[in-house]
Image (cartoon, rainbow, N blue to C red):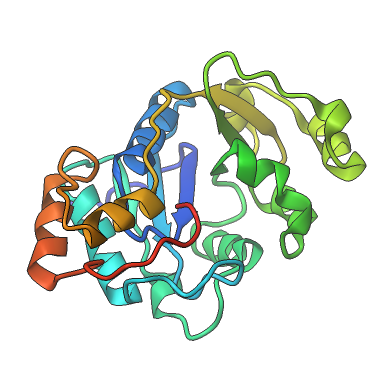
Length: 228
């Protein structure tokens, strides 16, 4: 049997604590696939997120929930490497690892929300992101970006690198694009608080994740902390 050629279309990258993964995460990935013409989206749970409090669930539980959430969608894949690594998860080393795995020519598209994008200047080696991947910023419909109010270095990157979805397939990295997503006011913080009150999380999470949480009695005593 002939070996299947490697996939070369743009690969979306969606990282997060996923504590737990919920429908807004999955909807962002799905709309990015369609709007940005991505080949797939790779979900990467953080093992030891450096900028957040310790996750409420263990890395093994969070990884398994992501695997369950992605299981019935062939356009999603799950990367366990950050969970298995003994060190903190930083985005630039993660992208460097992916570059080593996928080669220098595969377009990589780092997916993030507006708040995360505006906080980029606080990230570890943030300007190196653009050497390794494109950045796609998900925003609510009608949201207006206002670079004049941003830090000068971030506004400069936006002005220099702003492009279109067509640019994502024509180069491996270096562009910033924005795309509007369906507003979904769902957060992991609110879900954990709801579970701590013994309320149903149904229709906020994939059914397989709801069942996994119930089976392992996760978040029954979770205290609110952070948004995810």
